[in-house]
Amino acid sequence: MSVATVESVTEKVRQAAPPGRRLLDGPVLPTLLRLAAPTVALMLLQGAIAAGEAAFVGRLGSDALAGVSLSFPLVMLMTTLSAGAYGGGVASGVARALGAGRAADAARLGGTGIGMAVLLGLATTTVMLAFGRTIYAAMGATGAALDAAVLYSNVLFLGAVPFWAFNAAASVLRGGGNAAYPAAAGAVAGLVTLAVSPLVIFTLGFGVAGAAWAVVGNNVVMAAVLLRAVWRSPTRPGFVSLLPRHGEAVRILRVSVPSAASTILTNLTFVALTTLVAPAGTAAIAGYGAGGRLEYLLIPVVFGIGSALVPLVAAADGAGDVARVRRLTRTGAALATAACGAIGATAAMFPTAWMGLFTTDEEVLNVGAAYLTRVGPAYAFLGLGLSLYFVAQGRGRVVKPLFATLTRLAVAGGLGAIAMLEYHSGLETLFLLMAGGLAAYGLVMVAVMRRELGLAGRGT
Image 1: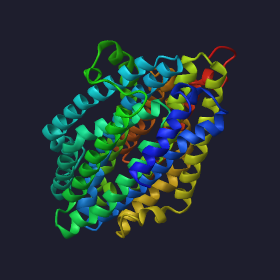
Image 2: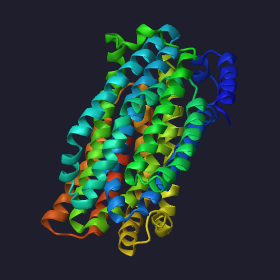
Image 3: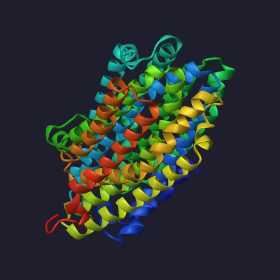
């Protein structure tokens, strides 16, 4: 599908109904699936592309794979901050304004969101170029694995500005009910990136840096395409609106900052657990990193559902439709729990099918398989908790979900540290505590969001 074709289709959809009404009308499940399907498909494709790129890097040796595995949590931190935490604030603000019939307000929010994203991208590049080596060394990386992590990271984070910009633009479009265009553009760009990666990694001899340069090129193209789409949308911001405005910035950050705190805690959990695994050696880091990539594949799957939940819940909340908010919450939670549970159970039953994508090293395979057989069954709780987190974003109430994230960190990271450092337990014990952390996360989120689920006596 060409970009021109996507623009033609989405233009017809745009003209068919006002953007706010598209979010408020229609039965819950079909509407949720219609908005979620393009993003879920894109995220699954991107997960497959990421796995393919990791397979290319794996051919460079275990040091290269370990280096990319070490940098992966920080790359995903930028991804979840820009697309999930910050992007959720942008999409929620735009959708809430449209649901209340304030189109001009939605345009100003979109412009401010994009302008602030550029500044956040600059900050990301500066921090990672200045402190990347220190961070990876603190995580336990040494020697060739540390050098590979720094090389990959330095190149990739040079593209942080277009990365933040295209995620902000995609959030503006999704906030207006247009999930198809960002998904189609991302699919085309991702496939091109996968095709180019072996060329720059092997043929041109750039090695692990080549994998990062391919991603940077993808970021630049996506930023150009999606910013152009925003300028052609009903929420088109004026040039002046790109300068961050205080009122709009506050509305975005009211959702984004607590969401970012939750995202940072989630990624700190992954970093802390990687640090606990590191003393077991390079093979253990590589095995856990490759196995743990499945969790990061699940997060985009839930993000696809959540990217539909945020604008739908925000628009319904802005219109005062409490019953619709409750139906959306239950439906979204059920979909995410089922999807993540199915993937996790499959990985637990057939762990080598996933691990074989990354390596043939038997020690690395064994560590990854041990992780998947213990943690995979708990992925259903991850889907449950994350879907409710997106509902909280749509409602603009994202402080209480921090307790669920802290609970996961306490169980997996805190108890894991005690088990590994005080009692010198093996990796199997640590992996069981990771599963316990996921279960605790999902159950605490149910308690926090009980009103939206309709489990409270009254109120929402």
